[in-house]
Image 1 (tube, helix red, strand yellow):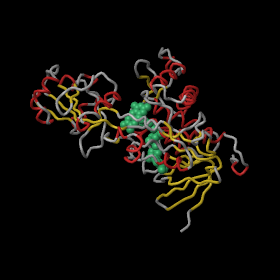
Image 2 (cartoon, rainbow, N blue to C red; image 1 turned 30 degrees about the vertical axis):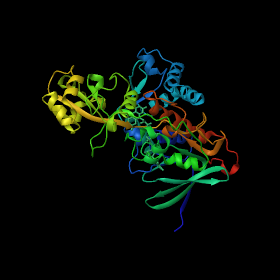
Image 3 (spheres, rainbow, N blue to C red; image 1 turned 90 degrees about the vertical axis):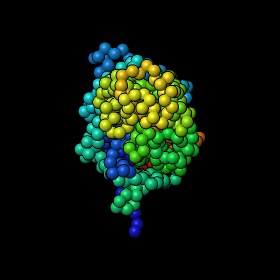
Image 4 (cartoon, helix red, strand yellow; image 1 turned 135 degrees about the horizontal axis):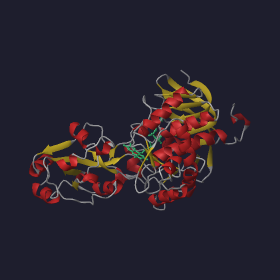
Amino acid sequence: MSDAVETTDLVVVGGGLAGHAAALAAAGLGADVILLEKLERFGGSSAMAGGGLVFAGTGLQRREGVGDSPERLRAALAEAGRGHSDPALLDAYADTQIEVHDWLRELGAEFSLTGQPVRRLHTMPSGVLVGLLHRRALDHTSVDYRASSPVVSLLHAGDDVTGVVVDGRAGRTRITTRCGVVLASGGFSRSRELVGRFAPHCAQAVAMGGVGNDGDGLVLAMAAGGAPVGMEFVEASFGASAAAGVEPRLLYAQSDGAVIVNTRGHRFADERGDIKALGRAVVEQPGGLAFQVFDQAVMEMSRRTPKTRDFAAALRDGLLAEAPTLAGLASRLGVPAGALAESARGLSQPPYYGYACKAGLTSTYGGLSVDGLMRVLDTAGSAISGLYAAGELVGGFHGAGYLIGSALGKAAVFGYLAGRNAVLAPRETARNAPAF
Ligand SMILES: Cc1cc2nc3c(=O)[nH]c(=O)nc-3n(C[C@H](O)[C@H](O)[C@H](O)COP(=O)(O)OP(=O)(O)OC[C@H]3O[C@@H](n4cnc5c(N)ncnc54)[C@H](O)[C@@H]3O)c2cc1C
């Protein structure tokens, strides 16, 4: 049976925050868009993340008296990247983020401000923003959203990318486009093969990104000549639950007073360190395993949001060992009682709790090389005609480190830029001219 054939203005690959932002931005300019999601459910990592996006100089910050600016945000992003961030991408983010913030608000987003040391995390509860954009996409007459539609290859005419092949439930479809293809298929945190190849230091980490984040876009674009950048920059986060058979989650009791010990009962890191520094420390421990150990005083600080501080839910879900004494807890955790008593001597209010955890790979920093218009670049630094990328798939932005809220921010900002630029870019040939 031959493949079905369709034509549209723009195809967007991936139904996370970046893909939805790209599709809506393009549709807002009058383009017809097909938004393809590999899985039955939309959302990817964007539906699982904490919920904050870094924006600076917004009306919300001004109303709440927070002194901030795009220049300060750009400097903070550059500092987090430890000198490895692409200046063109930092500029693209800093220059566009207020416009994207305002656009998201027009679409119905309601942010509250959180974050330290500057209150610039524009926060919505986990998954709510991508859910909102999904409803807007379903309501939009120019966006055709299709679930269970994995893109398996790109179509080419000479050096141009002209469409995609989808291998869906109903069979294979070739979709050709007038404006090009935006790849927004997320990172590669779920691909053992790609993590092993590009970031072997994270091979022991628990895979925690969206279950469709297998690096498909990376592989597709590289086959079309796209260059990878910063692939080695991957950092696992501390606090991923290590219980077998339960979907891993993050828990941070150390910020509220838990001590962190290894399987020998010894502390090995400063509990005040950030989750990436603690993540680096835990992978070096025996079995890559640690325990957050705390007492009832810490348990009483449990709160429902953020979920990372919901110790009561972790207890209910069977992720915590509990014992009336530290010696009893040591026995339940299988660590030497004497060493644990020494490490946890500040804890005094029974009962005692222990949370087994590893480093978790929530996202990857490296990805495709793009320019400030989100055009995918080849190894010579030239744009591949018709091919754009956005979101976690884009490399070179975070550099060697990541500012909390900049991955969700990057999905929204670069998705918006990719969708708009794919539609607005002057096409070289009449054959490709958009029909609207
Ligand atoms: C537990 C967790 C906590 C996090 N916390 C934060 C945080 O606090 N702050 C922050 O900034 N970031 C955080 N992140 C990272 C952030 O969520 C992601 O970097 C961001 O959401 C990526 O958005 P995206 O749209 O690029 O990818 P995703 O949201 O992952 O979407 C990609 C989509 O593409 C689909 N797809 C993949 N391959 C194909 C294909 N071949 N065809 C069609 N579709 C395909 C996937 O199924 C997926 O739905 C966290 C991530 C996780 C997992």
